[in-house]
Each structure stands twice: as C-alpha cells, then as structure tokens.
Amino acid sequence: MKFAILTDIHLGPEGFYKGTLRKINSNVKYFLDNFVDDINNDVKPEFVIVLGDLIQEDNAENDKKNLAYIVNLLTKLEYPVYYATGNHDLKNISKDELAKIFRQNSLFYSFNSDSYHFIVLFSKRIRKGYTIIEDDQKNWLENDLKETNK
Image (cartoon, rainbow, N blue to C red; front, side):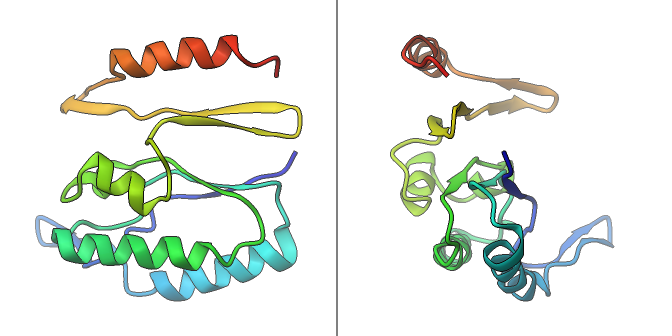
C-alpha cells in the first residue's frame, strides 16, 4: 500500500523564536500547488493523510482563511484526504470549527483502505510534556476496534 503524508507546512506569518526565523512560510502556496500536481501525476497513492500544523497561528480570522485555502486546494487531489490535528491548528479555532473546516464530524475517526483499518486520534495537550486522550475517545476507540475485522 502506498499513501502520502503532508505535515507541518505552517501557512501564515513567518515564525520567529527569540528573534530567529524558524519557519519560512512564504513559499507554502507554491509548495502546495506542486504537491497536488505531484500526488496526482506521479505518486498516485491510495490516500493522503495530513498530520496537522497546517497553519502558523495568527488570529482566528486569518487562521480560518488559511485552513480553508489549504482544504479547498487539497480537494483537487484525486485521492481521499484524511486530516489529523496539530497544536498550531487549534490556537485560535475551536475543535468544532476545525472539524467543520476539515469537513469531518469529529477530530478523531477511522477509515478503511484496502484491507487495512486506520485510526486517527485527537490528543489534547494539558501542559508542556503532558498530553492526554480523553475518555470518550478511548471508549469510541474500543468500540471501533471491536467492529472491524481489518
């Protein structure tokens, strides 16, 4: 099985840390156009999984606009696209808003491809170095795994 991964493109304002440029975001739109062309014409995967941090947070309005731009562009892919959430994607946007932008019912879900069952989980950062998966999601996962033979 072949699938493609897209992650950490950080569309938005350039990212600085203590005065040093850490994230060069000025070429992201050009990169995405090439990514779509390459996936459709050369890679031809079963699906594309997006692992989050699609944006470099700015403010709610710009973040929603940048996420919508990416999601709309990725609809040009000839293959299914599945989204996982990065911490930057949620800085100024609620979980429900983000799921809606991703055109999903939830930020955690499963899907099948070929003879495989894939699971996308949503972890929540409580504080630095401490991340959890909430109980409702654990219950969902247990039931989801019981329902598949893949």
